[in-house]
Image (cartoon, rainbow, N blue to C red):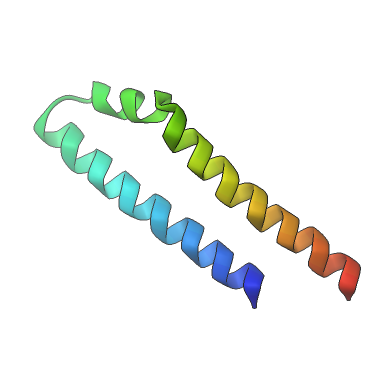
Length: 64
């Protein structure tokens, strides 16, 4: 249950970020996509979410 909730959170969050970036790139320029990916905070948050998901999968595989 925790794993599916984490995956849903990751997908929802990343979808919202990508929609915002797509709208910004349509209004400003396409270089905004590269700027969004270069931000350390964005990569850090994504890394934490993916790590938590992988960790919960590893724990669940050990329990069952």
